[in-house]
Image (cartoon, rainbow, N blue to C red; front, side, top):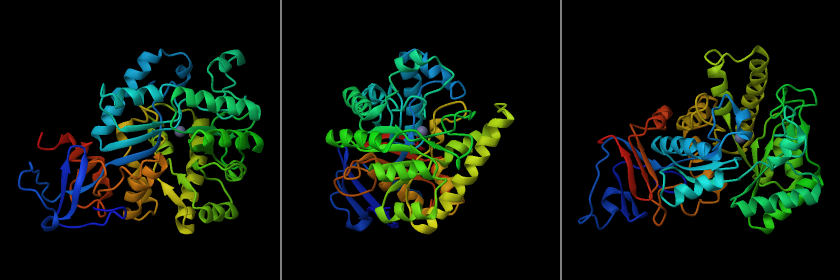
Length: 403
Ligand SMILES: [Zn+2]
């Protein structure tokens, strides 16, 4: 599949020199192959490497997220790198970490070649208001403040953005919504239609202004009408989750061409784990409510023409292993996205979210040779993406079914 439209061609060939693609197209039109080593992929389909536009390099047990505040950073980094290597082997040559204190250093370890993994873009630590999205009231306030994620007031938000810049963040992640005061599932809220916006417009604008001055884009965790409106009014670049909204707001997302990142896998893998991990009844009810509106708004968004990028919101094993990220493609197609659109949403559109679409995300001359090959035709059998036969990153063969 060549070009940004992922145009399918049969009997295609790709010529790679070093880490770059130097030619791609129909076999007969690709020149200079005489001295090149070749790899015959038979009936497989060669695609751009997959990109997850929303995940987390937490590096802790996904069923014990409370340990994020206390676990040793070295342990977390080791664990995250192991999962990232698995993710690369599963076909993901790019990923965007939407909040984790260790994200920028994990990215550095991969960049410097100490570990194999997707090319990462990292937000660094979340930015949340006091009592906001990621401020758990199960923890004494002094301890929560020591975590460095809390920021209040326009000046506080500016300072938080500067701290992320100092930490090497590639973009900024703000929390715009939460559940109510007595809500049991604080971060996502018990009810997607009863969310509380947790930053003021002035605070959002201050953070966006500071980030943009530093050349960084801003992503917002935004569920429910008020939070998505706040994101639009505040100049947020990318909207994460983005469901539980009205038709008016959906129309505005479309007219502004705003990208919404899907995160279907997050709830899907919770639902798949209800029994084996003994989720309490109240928590299952919360996820069921979120799933209902996530699915509703995904379908309405497809009809309305919302620009979706595929992101999983996977957080790690055992319930949300990063190596299962291709499930997002399967879920998107099951829920009505055209397979060709899903492939673009998880390659070139996701690359745009990461800010790397000029360099990766499609098979084109001059772009990096980040490639996967899957059996048969993924447009007919999207699940084939879950078991790639070949993965290449920067022109280097990561795995192939031949060994
Ligand atoms: Zn997330």
